[in-house]
Amino acid sequence: MIQVFVFVAILLGLVSAHGGTSNYTVDCIWYRGYSPDTPAANQDGQPWLVGRKWITIDPIFQPDNMSLPCNYPGDPAPSSIPITAGDNITAVYYYWLHTVGPMVLWMTDCGDSCSTLNLTTANWFKIAERGLISGTIQTGMWGQREFQNWDGTPNLWTETIPQDLKPGEYIIRHEIIALHIANRPQFYPECAHLVVTGNGTALPEKEYYAKIPGVWSMDQPEINIDVYAANVSNLTTYTIPGPPVWLGAKRSGVDRVLDGFKGP
Ligand SMILES: [Cu+2]
Image (cartoon, rainbow, N blue to C red; front, side, top):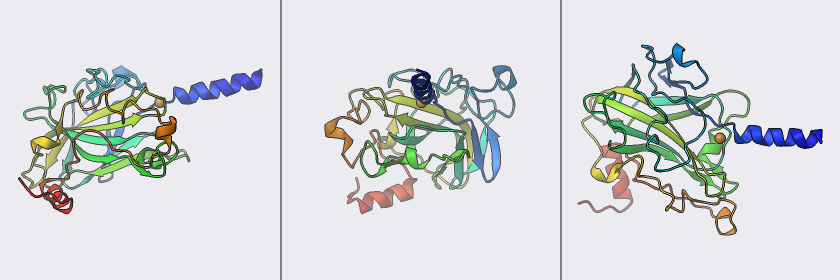
């Protein structure tokens, strides 16, 4: 009986062991985001806070949830991370236990101010994504599995800001989608404010934009998925829905030429 109890407790522990990113690094400088594990009074409105507010490590289950852009309640960040286009930004996750499903890194141009931007009508674009790298959907090497550390050190998700992105204020949005429960996708988004500098002049074209919510749907077989189903579990490809990743005007152009894109 005790063994059964311990086993169930471990299962429950894993099931409730969700998470997210609460810190960022750029060029070895730490920036503090919001942490649901820290009392609100110690971080709300603090001048150092670069992350938008989120209060629980639990996932969002509905692709049409109005808090999907920057989690709940998503209050604007008082501060922002300065970064030069072309530089790397790393999101720090102190733990991450899920293994199946895509990771997508988004940005949106805030225009005048990230504090007043309407998140649900904004134009979001992908700057990176990690899906199924090798093996099968059920047991293969997903980016999400590769991202995990099991030695107690934080999990680090590093990507590059497109080099020719025009300077300005942006929100960066790290999203992990966990698909380990059949037909019940879990969304884990967190946002931070950026001030991008550099010599770039580019913004994505319309084909790269998506609305959040809107980009994911229970009508998509890649989102409303049972990874244990016989006709799914052994598949070796997985297409992340949504627009293509924007790597900057130059690199996206090169990629499209390589893909046989003939131009407008
Ligand atoms: Cu979880």
